[in-house]
Amino acid sequence: MYNSILHFNDLGVKKIEERIKKFISEGKDIADLILGVNQDLMKLGRDIVTEVLEDMDEFLRQDGVRKKDWEIVRKDATGLLTTFGQIRYKRTYFKPKQGGKRKYLVDELVGIKPHDRMSADVVINTLDEAIESSYRKAGEKASYENEVSKQAVMNKVHIAEVNPPRLKSSEKRDVRILYIEADEDHVAHQAKRKGGTRCLMPKLIYVHEGIDLERSTAKRSVLKNVRYFGEDCKSEDLWLQVAQYISEQYDEDKIETVYISGDGASWIKQGLNWIGKSRFVLDNHHLNKYIKVATAHLNDEAIYQGLKDALDWPDKEMAHRVFNRILELTENETKISAVKDARKYIMNNWAGIAIKAEKGYEIVGCSAEGHVSHVLSNRLSSRPKGWSRTGANQMTKLLVYKKNGGNIYELVMLQKEKERLEQKEEIQDEIIRSMRRSGVRYESSFNVDLPAIHGGHKTGLYHALRKLVGKCG
Image 1 (cartoon, one colour):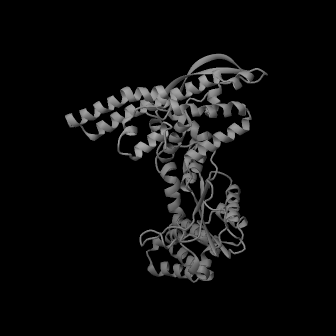
Image 2: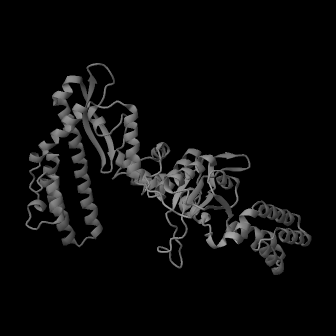
Image 3: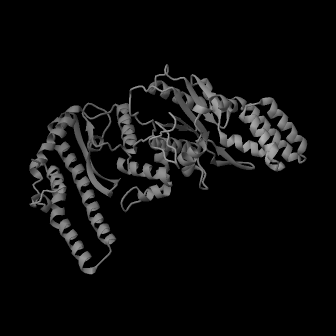
C-alpha cells in the first residue's frame, strides 16, 4: 500500500491540482471537476486494493507458519470486479503437505471464493439497485466504468439468502389490540399459458399496533411498530412466520384481540387458525366495491342506501331482501350474474362485516391495497415485465427485507460467513494470526508526506489521514 499511496502523493495529487487550476482558469462546470477528481480517486482505490492483495500474498509466501503445512505450486494472475472498477492481481497457488484441496490462500483470507468474478461490494451495489429499478440499471451502476450483465444480476438476486433483519428489541411489548393486514400482488409470469399469461401472486402481510398519533399528520397516517412479511409461498408458511414474530415480540397473555383485515381471500382467513384471539375484518375498499357492483346499474339512491344500511346495522335478513329487490329490477343477464356474485361475496364475509358494528371503535382502516402497491407493485407489477417464479419470490423477499429496515451489506456478509462455516475448509488459525500480527509493520511504512497531514490546521481530514497512516496521537 505504501507504493500506491506514495505514487498518488507524487503524481496523483499533482494531477488533481492541475484539474483544480484548469477548472478555475477555464471556468468549467463544477461537474467537470467532480468527475475528474472521482476518476483519480477510483484509480487510487484500484491501486491500493491490488497492492494490498499482492502484499498479503507475498507475506504468505515468506511466512514460516505457512511453510510448515503448505507448499507453493505456482503464481497466477486473475481479475476481480470491484466498486473502484476492474483490478488485476497475482496470487500464489498452494497445496497442503498432508493432502487436501489446493488453494489460493490470499483469496480465502479476504473472502474471495473460487470462480468469484466480482467482490462482495459489487454484489451489494447490484442488489441495492436491482431492488429499486431493474436488472439492467443495477448492472450499469454496480461498478465504476464496468458493467455487470443482466443475467449476472439476476443470478445474484436468485441466490441471495434473505432472512428477516434483526429485531430492534428483544424485550416483549404489552399491547391490548394488535392488527394484521394482508393482500397479494398479481405479477405476470414469464411462462405463458394458452389463452393468456399465467399470474404469480406473492403475498404481503404486515403486523402493527394501530395508528401512531405522534408521527401521523392530517394527510397521512403512520402505523406504529409495523413489521412486514412477504413471499410467493404456501400461506401456512407465511402465517407461521407471523405467529412466531408475535410470540417473540409480544406478551400474548396481555393481547385481548388480533384483528386480521383483508379482502376475504381464503389464504387470509387461514390466519384465524394460526393467530390466537384473532377475528377477521373485511376491508372497506372491497366491501364498497361490491356494493357498487350490486347497485350502480339501477341508479337508485334508495336501493343503494337500503343495502348500505343493512350492512352497517348489520341486518342479514334485510340485506337478503334488498338483494332480492335488486334482482327483480335487473333485466340484463350479465348484470344478474354480477349481482349474485356480489351477494355471495358479502354473505360469505358477513362476520367480517358485522364485527364493525360491534368493535368499530377500536378497528382501524385497512390499507393493504396501498401497502401492496407501495412495497411490491412498484417493482414487480406496475411495469410491463414478466418474472420467473424464483425471481418474483426472491424480489418479494428483498423488498420486504428493505422495508423492515434491513441492510444489504449485512445480508451479503451474513451469507458469506454462513457459507464459510458450512464449508469448514478454513486456513489454519496460526496463519491468520500471523497475518494479523504483521499489520503492525505498516505503521512505520506509511510515512507519507501529505499536505492534509502536515498542514497547520487540524481538520477532520487531518485526523482521518493520520489514522490511515498509523500516526494518530
